[in-house]
Length: 420
Image 1 (cartoon, helix red, strand yellow):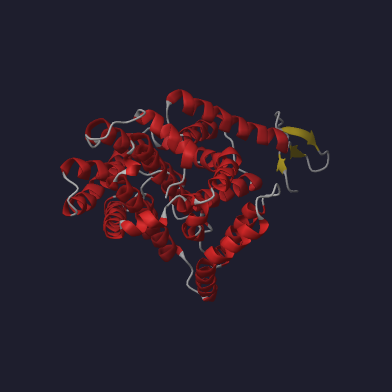
Image 2 (cartoon, rainbow, N blue to C red):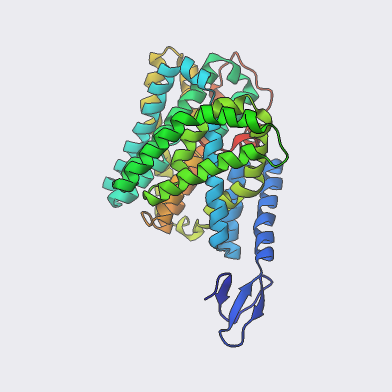
């Protein structure tokens, strides 16, 4: 079968010719593209109308399209979706202010570390010993539910003004540490330990060490050009390390997070460049990623009583284990009861890295489509339920929101839908 074709005699508006010998139908790639971009456009309009993060709506639209229209990702859609996940992960790391992280290092390390390990261990234990998933499937479950949502938390901090307060800075830094732990665990558990992995680790270390100085020099040298040499340089680095990660049997998103962190200072001082990269990511790349993630969800796997029990149970496991770990830590740092509850609930959120981890497991055959569906559903619920509870009942009383939480969730999708 030639590239861009599909066998069979049936035709639709997506196909435009049939060869008499092979009877292969040529795919009209422009109409396929129009379908996917149209779904992304519909998701954007719905997110504005419903007051929800655009990533959440894109996943939901993908679920409907996958189950009703039976859309299937092809090679170039898979590439765009993968590209979107890499760029999204990079932007998540680039959003972290190193000075803020350094100023709140002890609190961030403690809260972020326990906030990652506790749900990872708890969800793994439930999946392995109670649900009787195999080790790799249970590990993907633990990793996917260990995350927090920097995008949602960041939006809430901005809209309530807490980003200017000590508590908001600590929460954001802890979210970064949490998601960094998720990335590290994913890499450690599923990497192929061979000479290629060693070469990848060495190359990544050299690049991370030299990149801030080289990037600063390069940006000053090329200046602000219409051809966007700065963006091309960053993408070149992401693709090189992503390619090495692939050779090493790892995932391309793993080095992207660290690259974003080491270049965060450059992007904090060049917000125009950051906005340009966001525009590239959120207009054309990340919609393919979230639509694809949703299209792989099998709704029929959610309609049984057992599926509902598993989804609700895993959501409860994530939130309970977060409370067990994060709440005592925040109290130890004298946050106070209300701020501790607020911090714990926001740390219980999850979105992008949760779906990335689940999709990684599904793409590599570690979990099946039914397990993937359950995990993505739990991740989506975790982005909504804890946030609404935190904002409704436990927002620190000395702060008054400039916008309601629904608008904050919209901002999460539009401003930085990067889980990190």
